[in-house]
Amino acid sequence: MSSKKSPASSSAGHRNAPKPTDQDSTAERAAPALESGSEGISGASPSNTAPYNSNFTYQPLRWGVDSLYLSYPGTLFNAREFELRSLKKIAQGPDHESSAAQIQLGRHIFEVKDKSSGLFAFTLVDGAFMIRLSAGKSNKLPMAYVQVSSRLLCHRTPQDIEQELREILRLLGDVFAPKVSRVDLYLDFASGVDMEGWKRDAWVTKAKAVTQYAEDKAFTGWTIGAGGTLSARLYQKVIETKKSGKEYIHDLWRQVGWDGEQPVWRLEFQFKREVLDQLKLGSLGDVLDNLAGMWSYASTDWLRLSMPNPDDMTRSRWPVHPLWIALSTVDWGTPGGPMARTYPASRAPSLEWLGARCALHVAAIGAVTNLTDFDAAFAEAKIRTYDAMILKNGMSGISVDQFFRERVEQHIRVYNMRMNPKAKDGKPSYTPERSEYERQSRG
Figure 1: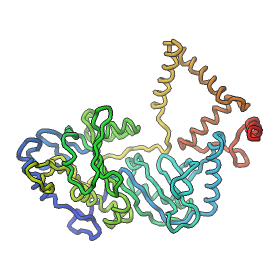
Figure 2: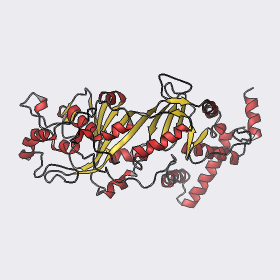
Figure 3: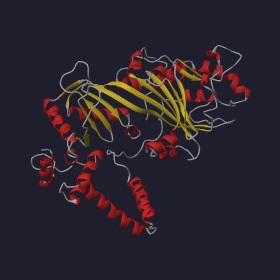
Figure 4: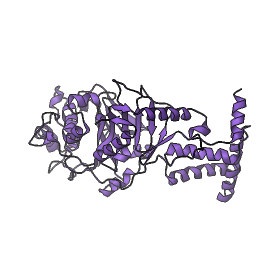
């Protein structure tokens, strides 16, 4: 979460840093709003620690890098390419074979996907990384294109993550220092501001598209410049975490004073490779050294939230919204909040989540069979589950125990829990009865 202070914000400067915006002049443009009291604030200028003391509060909770995509030039080892082709073929096979489509690299156990995307030949996935690999020698594609998990970025710094990632990729081929293909910077904050309290023209931006969203009649946020090389989102983060299962971040907010009640919003800027090239930021080190300059460029030069003045047709003169002053001046030279103490390398859901789903299914069985006693409904659920497995097997000839074991191994592969057992010949184990049945059914 912490980053070096940007050369763009230091006296030393940096010729490759994004052009900073004069925050003093921004504050001057906002002065009429601050004095009017209509939607402004009084007292000291907003900071990372000082809340608004008038109409609303602003409480920064966390800020840092949320999404990171890295491209590694290099060449895949021939032996690894052969191994991955074999595993990909296994992944494309019958369900009872695909559970063996796994590869262990260091302490990570990856699922080898049956398909990849674009021109990349292979895709490996676990709870930390999604790695796409190109086969053979290519002048157009990097050897590896990697997406880093946002949850991992809540646990470790980008520098530490990249160091481990490079060691993993060295087990697959000859790799060189990566370029950043995409990086998302974010700020989570609690505020009572009505984020739907302005119209689209309040956004003064170089982007063309400005879109607002709602879900079940509740306003959920704004998107500016979607699909472009630089885009922004301001959205209700609590609602998003409940949908995505990222509620672990709630504890990190509470550690810095969130009361668990006030709405939490996220302001997020997405920088793609093209805009990073324009800003002359190529390596991960360049990006991490210039986080403050990138944020300043995005939140002042490229986008700002204004307070429209109907008497002035020149939008560039409209005063800056007081909330935006606070959001654009977050201190990237300070730690961006506490880190998560642990990180699950697997993609397995929690036992609490699974237990809640089981309870729903048992209750549904109880409703259909008119059983209100939990033990009776659970016993009925077991019977129905057993019957369903028998029906699913059809005439394959395999036992229910074998069928269930295969389903468990499939989940082990998808959840990255451990390596599934293999037969002595290296192929997945399955019963002779099923093999003979399949042989005959295929003619």
